[in-house]
Image 1 (tube, rainbow, N blue to C red):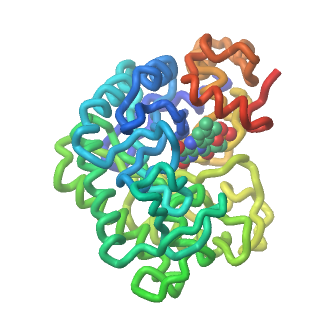
Image 2: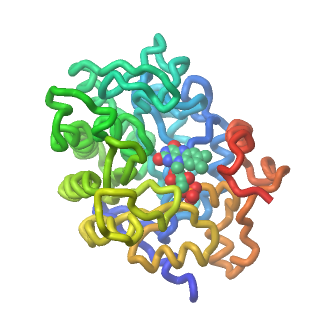
Length: 369
Ligand SMILES: Cc1cc2nc3c(=O)[nH]c(=O)nc-3n(C[C@H](O)[C@H](O)[C@H](O)COP(=O)(O)O)c2cc1C
């Protein structure tokens, strides 16, 4: 009873219905095959986690070869990938969860060794967070990447996914175009706030066109964004409001606000002292459903987050730590939920070796006991 609000079904605009309000956040696992095809290890990892959340969003999948940002990243950049992606969609959907493929281009954050000829591209010739010098995309290359997001959507449809999430967050290419720091262009893709919006909006339109052209069944489109950048110049809350207003006009199924901490407060660009997610939820109202995320571990954390009127709550790390989180709460066993990893948990929790290595190599990223 106490957690009923998490277990109400939810209907998206496109006609997709999910069983409950818990979403598995997109998480890179570094475990796809080297060519970007789906591996057995990743299928086992998703299979172990597919019995609870209403919606599962995959690791980000690169839409072009020069958009690959991680070793072991799944690819959706060519038709040969569709067979493996179909197995992934089937695995996620086997017990009723809906499957969403996150579609992505890493831009200047791609390590040179992962992209053809080490040619790292971005909105402008700005260095990455790792000190890699990127090259500004030519206009025709910008158009090619936009088309690639449409093609990736077609492949997701053919593979049997229920939707795509456009990765506009976490400092990758779409955000690089929106950011006043990384977009220093003076053509139609940059120069003013409105022009910085044009690349992400062109991708939304291309994805929508692909859905109209190819989907025979309801297919959802979500957009993920990060509300602020730490550096100045950088995206402020005020600029994020403009992005949100533009996205609301696009009639999407959801907007996903990427945060490490659900209750985090704005840095700048607003005088509102509430949490970012509450401010954003109020701005969007009931026009588009919002997904909130960030450091939600217990059933109590989730229900508290849900009380903000955010319709959907995503969990990332906690679903790695506790693959049966939803089932346990449903069965009244929430007190048995594990909220930290143990040193020997990898096999028991069906965590791919590469993801486990990444976790243990980054102290403080995941809670351990
Ligand atoms: C291992 C790992 C991989 C991630 N990969 C992605 C990704 O591919 N795409 C994305 O948008 N966010 C990614 N994130 C961010 C998460 O989706 C989420 O926003 C973040 O971890 C905060 O939620 P949490 O506290 O519930 O983990 C990743 C996070 C983790 C822990």
